[in-house]
Length: 556
Image (cartoon, rainbow, N blue to C red; front, side, top):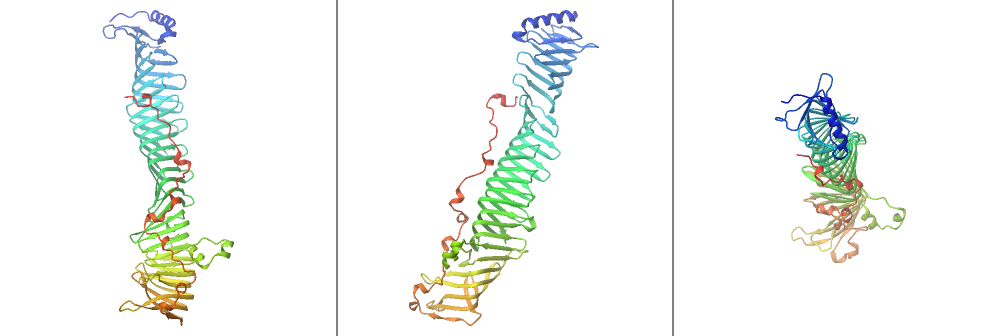
């Protein structure tokens, strides 16, 4: 080893060289050292700087000051390696400590190794190896790192920090621990000042009362709200909410879903689907529109209810579903249409309601027009209409128990043995009973009228057409069809031979056969209006454009 020489002379020489060449090559400056030596055999071209009892090694380059116990400085390469309690500072905005650091003055890059701790006013970063690129203002690591800011702790296996944007990109097993939530993601872009995070890949956010899963997401970590896409799912208020795009605000207790949405209620064993929905936790309510459909599991059978808008309100044990505008119902043994619907599962009540008449409609509507406006149900082969239809179910078994129709009751059933004949019954009120979920019998009262085709049991020849009026009658069903009719009060009518009863007298006033409205498949529940794709801004939200340059990638 060569003997040491006067450090002051060397310092003057380097300072002089730096003065001459600083403008061109921006030579690293030696600000201070306890002493200096050289060892050309082991460290050719290096000036070995070391500390003394009163001085540590100080190197400076374009606003960065590096303090250490020892440094190997290569002036021709404009490069050094410092070790021993290294402190790297850049103004008052960045301070980094580590065991060793290598610094290249030409590229302004540094490699810090061993217990790396980087501090900025808004955060701290801990990792084992950190690369610092001062020209592009970024730092990156490929060893497990921990970020701590004012509210959260973030961990990842790889990270990239954009100093100018105060933005982190975390990759591989990313975790954010916050007192109010935990975030896990494959990749996460995090802006330290605004506390905003962009999620990429399989991601999960677990809050006190919610869990969010997605493959793309934007999350405001301070306000606990965000937008989530690609297989987005929200577990919230005993519901599972899915959609092409989800919006969630924890503080407002509010969520919205857009396009291909579904809301599964585990307590009521029901699913609501549609293209736009809003959930209000404090109000215990949800609104779904645009191809909206509720699916209730009843007796291992599915009841489908479609409407323009569905509104679910109340706590789970007292949930009420309201459907508005062109309600359509489909079940294995029931079909239905109405303007609106009210369903209260806590008492087993379903109401089908008509659209209120305007004053002009009240004046000009015929009895047939009124019947066409009324809600309609089909039980197997029987069509039933009235001003208001009520279905009651057993709250324990969920099986249908009874049927009520209030006002303008009209029952129609196609006569299967004649070409144009219809069995018909009119009245003011209807009360019916179910047996094993099948309509068993009904009683019709108030101004009851009937048209019924009678056949010989032996050869099924038409006996005649019965036209009768009475105060009340009872009707039983067998295999989904009218079986027997019993008049409860003395009837008034006749049985007419077919050729003695004109065609126009074979239907009761107001007769309307609405079979074309009867839904037979799930697709029949929807019309052209349900195909329109008009969605709120939530679906149009776009994530920041990916940088295409290599600088956007984690350095390997």
